[in-house]
Image 1 (cartoon, helix red, strand yellow):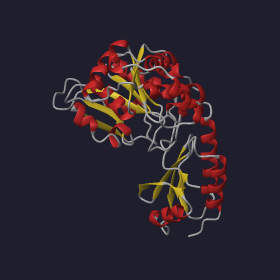
Image 2 (spheres, helix red, strand yellow):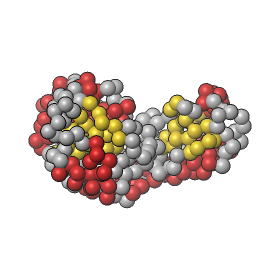
Image 3 (spheres, one colour):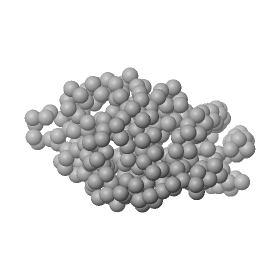
Image 4 (tube, helix red, strand yellow):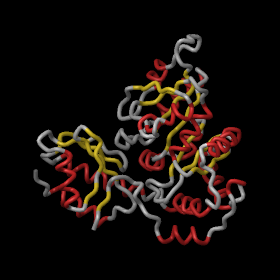
Length: 341
């Protein structure tokens, strides 16, 4: 039995999801004639109380499209030093939009409204880039699945409005944040100009993300998606999985969070651990003691059919997910409990 905790992207569609995929009606989504894609897009837009949404093959493409629309070449966006749009999207910010990043040294991928204010370049000082966008990631990937406080997000919104800045939410794991913080999609729809959400992480879909915003914004997004090669044809087969996931797989994220906290409890008491980042959702980041290298630890895990991922500096990450069963969980806890250097 393999235990794959590399990411929540490793899940496979369940049989009910596959049945819905087979039975759905499809058309050509490039011409906006796929009824299942249209249904998914309307569903998500309504969930967030926003005017429109657009289905994308990946969250990276959705984020990059939003940045392209919100900025002009030579502009600068503000984000945390841990942000996915800066660290894990292949340099797309500069390649696709000709934009630079002002990095905030936040806490676990999160920052304050005051930090945003101090990061805005003077608009009349033409020697520096024009600040035009603030990007927030919730939950934070490199921050160990931490959840933003909506009060702070609203304070940042006020700063953005006062300084005529656009405001984008990379909500790849926003479903996890909502479950943990007891917030609703419309709480975020009221704050942000645009939001991206992912279906292929904790919700168990094979492919897909959506970008949400105003009708005018999404009309622009359709053109950028085409430019980036993201137009798909009978993508209703994938959209059907998304509809099933949104209707069935959000509340169960609580199970992933509980299991991550139970793993945290074991690791905190382990002699081979230097530090464990506080667990809030389904991501757990921990650092090994200096007398145990990550290479040797990972090898021992592989010998026990457990797959984790390295983050460098003797840090490792694991992510609980839908396909990580209770049987796997109990076995993994047992492996950690009896681990020896």
